[in-house]
Image (cartoon, rainbow, N blue to C red; front, top):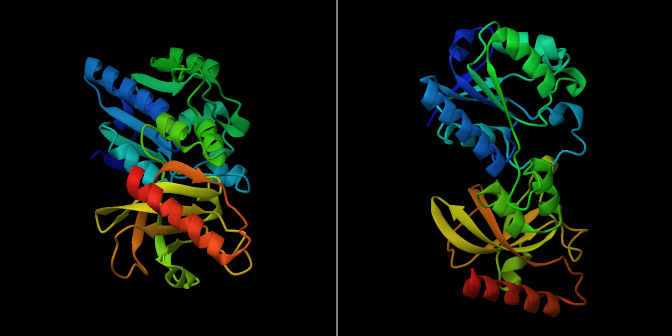
Length: 307
């Protein structure tokens, strides 16, 4: 695991000297990001410098567009994933209001403070500085003076379309979990703590673990999914309902309910990681409870046989 450093007042900016940096927000740490990080590791190995993932402590859209943001990971999960990506270090920039108001020129001065890396890897559409005015063109002009190499990459998938967090969010919202996972390079997942639910699942014959997720982490479209749930390091097959069922919309605000197959024990207060693998069906407003039970039992049977 790479060391994680905060680029604050105590940070020694000479740490950047001779390094190869991959710079971005990296929400989801998807295949496009992995390619960027791999490129940084390659040029670091060739030049003898450190490979660094350079990112922010929060997603800038948490400041500018909090009402529409649907994150693929928490900030801690994102930074942790970067630390396990193979780079030598992760440098985290505090994204303050003052920092966000910096012009592109001030942004570069504040970030590197005269110690430009040997290589700086970014996506070809990378933007920085106040109102995202800085582009790769401005980076290249700065690089001529700073004597660094700007490596702008086309982060496209096999179909030629760019791999972006926005594209993945749209796929998730449209229930296309298979394509989203393909572009992520890993199963989309959420982590939550089990809360007290309605208690009706036991009466229906299928107990569920209720996870209430912050709205900013609700990127996945409503529906029922085949998933794996991890409890205390043990993996269980799970049928998972995301979103509030029309049947119970006046009685709950739970946003994720997971039935863990063959689990015995108490889950209240326990953290659960849920990995999503298959979309089974949209939310349905059933005519009666018997229809609901029959449909859910069918979903559970599918998960048991095919997942």
